[in-house]
Image (cartoon, rainbow, N blue to C red; front, side, top):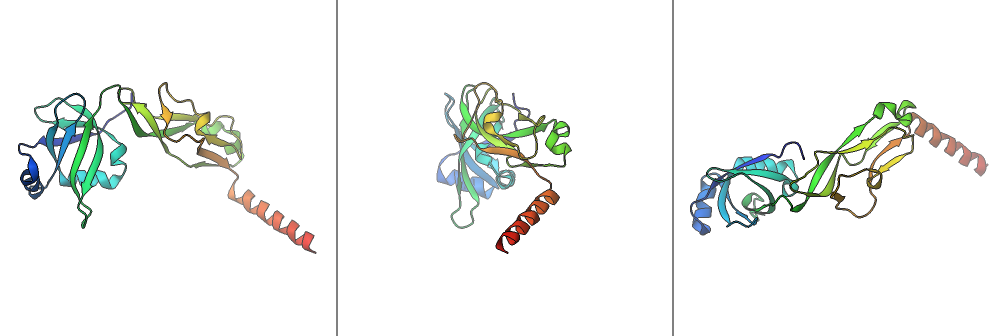
Length: 208
């Protein structure tokens, strides 16, 4: 199970319709609705400043939240839409979907790299280049992995780590079908430069 699912604090909205939504915005709130999960839709409002801060951090639509609304049980939700002002590009309304424990969702899961100090390529001066510090995976809402682990032991300079070489938890799969690169061990910059110089020299010798 994933470590910490961030809380999203909301307040139940007593009124519905355009008038209530406008009043919520005047009060510094963003109106929204929670739906799905076999329960009736719930009208809510979220503090504008808090929502704006989370939107700026990125990947709001692919983050699982623990929704806390006073008077209601906590529920896991994922945002399915954020409507924005066409001129100011500020959030005006959001749709949150309740998730069952068996629901399949796309989430970005962090990648942990272990045994870097024992990798032969690193010992020779190679540089670990991390292409994807996190990977978007299809996971089950009730069993979200905290991270996926990449073991660097035995990797040499020039070796590449792709998603197919990583053992994923049961029931978890990448959202991208192709075998994409997660990281690689590249030669030190000094060796790369020396190699380039040698190649240039060979070219010049051939031209003569």
